[in-house]
Amino acid sequence: MGGYPSEDILKDFYIPDYVLARRLEEVGDVSHVPACPVVVFVNSNSGGRRGGDLIVTYRTLLNKNQVFDLGETAPGEVLQQLYENLEILKQDGDPLASEIQKRLKLIVAGGDGTANWLLGVVSDLKLPQLPPVATVPLGTGNNLPFSFGWGKKNPGIDKRSVMSFLNQVKTAKEMKIDGWHLVMQMRALKEGSRDPIEPSGQTNSLNAFQQDGFHTFRGRFWNYFSTGMDAQVSYAFHSDRKLHPEKFKNQLVNQSNYFKLGCTQGWFCTSCFHPSSRNIAQLANVRMMSRQGQWEDLYVPRSIRSLVCLNLPSFSGGLNPWGKPDPKKSHERDLTPPYVDDGLIEIVGFRDAWHGLILLLPEGHGTRLAQTSGVRFEFKKGAADHTYMRIDGEPWRQPLPADDGSVTVEISHAGQVKMLAPRFCRSKSLHEPSSPVS
Image (cartoon, rainbow, N blue to C red; front, side):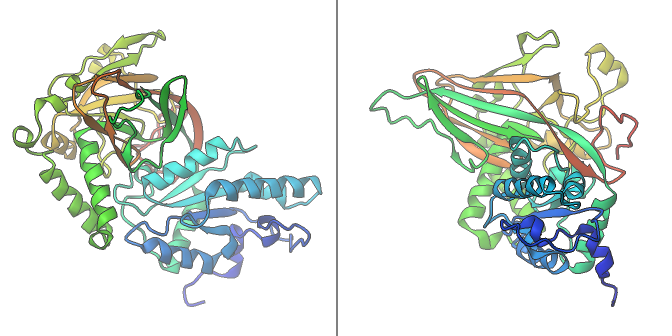
């Protein structure tokens, strides 16, 4: 076979057309039960356009109808139709349908924003059995894939590389991961006001509502929410990439451009580019949910210019802001190990990019502020005309009201989904605390 996988091996991942198609009259060969049936979603615009080539490879190896370009097809439509087909087939006594539903795994290739999208869809559909998800690192930061052991470099797109990944998916373990709701709310403007309030920029992760005189935006994240200088740099990067896509051809070039923007935006040069009014303490009051279920104020040092609410041990391309606290200090502050499925989120602050570079050291970490099951930000009116926020790699510029009211952001637990991970990965589970962490 010239080193390429045999048809018998590929059958372990194959889903026949009659299961996938809307018309269910024709039933195909059911003699082979796939050990690891997969549905593949690829963002064709990710990875310096390598996503398009990856789609071709997957469609060559598998049934082309089980591989989807997210630029053309929404994952919710695909999964809803597939599960409806499976239910009909099960009712008709089809022997393959129940096995596929039981063993189904999802693969998503793209950046962190793409993975966030698919995980949200899986959670929202309330499927009878949640399929676990494997993430292919096809973006710039790739924090989600890195957290679960899939690496952070863009993968090979040839048949051998894709087949190797499929085999890892086949043997991967399942891990649960907490999801987090984000609700941002501000009072609707008075008639005739020209003060903008809606977020601008990369807002695909937010859904807008208006009721009872308030504008409300809802979103969900699995890795992090951040506000402040890091989100400003991310916003500049995404805006520049949208205007000049030819400058962002591969992961290495993207990371270089990101670093340059960090310099020009003042992430390294505080006094020259970043006035004190942009410090988090000047912009917002921050409250956290205590272990007794009561809201209490969270002290944020005035030097902190970026605040991260972190669920996974990977941020900004694989760095771990929380680090490994000293056991004695953890006991004194009532801190627990940062599990990804414990219903708690870690809050970390950074003064500037130089502070962030400490994460490159073995014991490096940001300013550990708290662990909590809920966070509330109240951005003060008149403190600034805007700030920056982002969730799982998707940034936006958030205008702040100049006269009437404030912008509130509240974060709360939002259930769990299943991830796939090789045996060794950075993320730790509450139910597998002895799992090694690299």
